[in-house]
Amino acid sequence: MSATLYPTSDTASRKLRFTKMHGAGNDFIVLNGIDQDLANITPDQWRKLAHRQLGVGADQILIVEKATRPDADFRYRIFNADGGEVEQCGNGSRCFVRFIQDQGLSSKNPLRVEVAHTVLTLKSHPDGQVEVDMGAPIFEHDFIPFNAAGLHTLQEFHETLYALPLTTPATHDSWVGVVSMGNPHAVQVVGDINSAPVLEEGPSIEKHGAFPNRVNAGYMQILNRHEIHLRVFERGAGETLACGTGACAAVVSGIRRGLLDSPVTVHTRGGDLLVAWGGVAQPVIMTGPAMTVFEGEVAI
Ligand SMILES: N[C@H](CCC[C@H](N)C(=O)O)C(=O)O
Image (cartoon, rainbow, N blue to C red; front, side, top):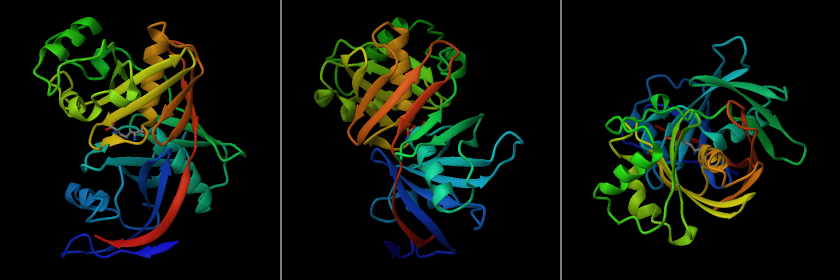
């Protein structure tokens, strides 16, 4: 289905062709930056494009570009709905493969794709699922970055986090993991995913002073050693129906704390993801869906 949308602002200067996609309900505007001019688009224009009423509406905007590294086939950049550019997007990586294949930009499988600081290997399966090698998680606080007054243990962070006036007192016997999948995540265990204070507490954690680049706030309920429920209040987007890097961060945190065993099925509100991890310094492999919804043109 194709849709022509009206300008997202009365000073619209150019028309962009886009494809609307989602991975387990985490939705994206995908733009081909190889055959159209995406230079000099401002954060305000990205915000308008992602706006659910004023624009196309999406959690993130993905830009497809030519690779700048010899070990990659393409490069892709990620902008949150708040207009900020970020390092990584797990669900977006799966949709990226589907877009490249559907647009006939490459028939390679697996595909090597360059994102902020690394190259991901993306493999599409005959059943439509896409498998992403997300690289190894980073636990060292120096790289997340995480600078809560020199706090180094998760317990110290946990006490600091809950010592600060959050909108709701910490009602759950939470347990905190701080990990980077290229982008920063703070993960907690809750007893019941449906009553987790994602909307009440997520914004305070996202902007907590311990995370100078802000953070994605994950809440996981452990069903058994191979299955969790997960909700994430995403940095720059709010609660999404699914968060791919959040699923990876939750699984590796749980495995590292002896609460989970690989592989783990992650039930998100938008669908299921499968996350496998062989242990420290090993890559995290995430498998899940990637869907194309419609194509269109929008003036920004
Ligand atoms: N909000 C994230 C980026 C998108 C990640 C998420 N949509 C995923 O699937 O990994 C951040 O600011 O780090």
